[in-house]
Image (cartoon, rainbow, N blue to C red; front, top):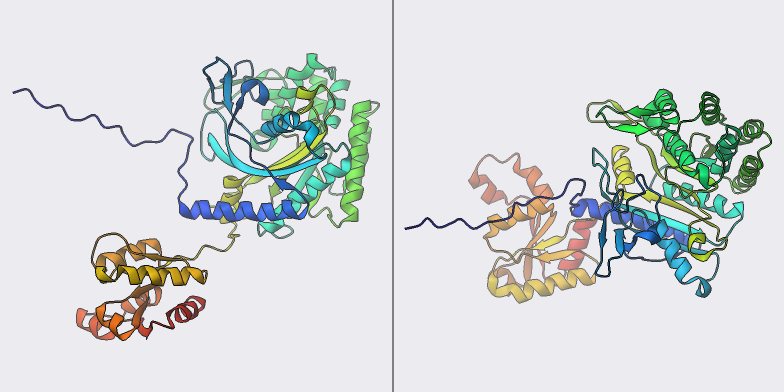
Length: 493
């Protein structure tokens, strides 16, 4: 007889760079996002949700290797041979939405949104192909007041997440300043110099990670990393490299002094002087509203990596002393940022449409908060009603409904297994209180309330089964009529 072939079963596996997020992570992310939403709402912004897929030409080519639509983004052709791409951020889809609904929207259009974004890049430690962003954007306001407001929002989100002054800083720069420096170094501020300018921006954006030598190589001919991958440089002249590196260290703790330093650097560049004036206007509004240099500073090393920024840019950086499990210092650095992007909606409209925004990576921010022991309150585990007698399931569900009506999380055990197995389940779920009712308790209209946390502590001192049975640790009998109020007391305690 021929041997029967074993059925072919797929191997359970997930793609690299994509993560499963269990309940504790999701709940923490939701709390962080809701804290940010409360800030956005307080400033008068409104929620919006856009789809994960957009047409590739609508998203635009703002990521590396932009000559091919399938590089840097995840893309596919639909049934009419058009390229679709998963969004790589939430800003480009917003630009499409505003352009599509332009005449119907009140302007400035102020919206906030969170959702997954996707990057078709090499995954690594802390670098994922799918991650959640949380954004706020203002479209239709050209004034520096809109940029100053975004900077204030970023600082207030840091506070809403539980950080205190001194644990974070919002660092601000202006793309026009660097444009002015490059203009004086022979890089034209036109489409002809766009690719070279973008390489300069990406090089400076790596200053924290690669140091001055690494950035100098990327401003010049190029650089090979530790894995052997080669990145072509911006090919600036020696004087151009010197000017750009000098620009990155022009900052001062005093915002006014930074502006004075920049005015000297940009010289007669019209675009550079525009950038200086915008920083001056932002500084005045920050001073008027109490956002001092301890919360917001001007830092010329901040450029932001994406190619669509056109004016003020900023990053939110964590300053707290963070250590890993072995006590070694860990530098988290930037956990979010944003800036002005006046050309993104204009691509569709053929007319100027100013815009500015702020975005942070939810998982990265949350990871940093955990390391700093700054966490929003955790969700309480449900009260578990044990299935002591299957004939009483209707009563168990009635009890659970009464608890939920008083805003107490509750679940009835609907699986299979005796009380011992149910207690093991409760332990794995982190349940603190369990409710038991058998036929005797039902007839007497009582229930048994078991404090599993206290019981576990008391059990450590019990040496035998007989002692366990006689002591019944952390267990009490309460009236069925009063059981909701008694559970409330136990939970509060």
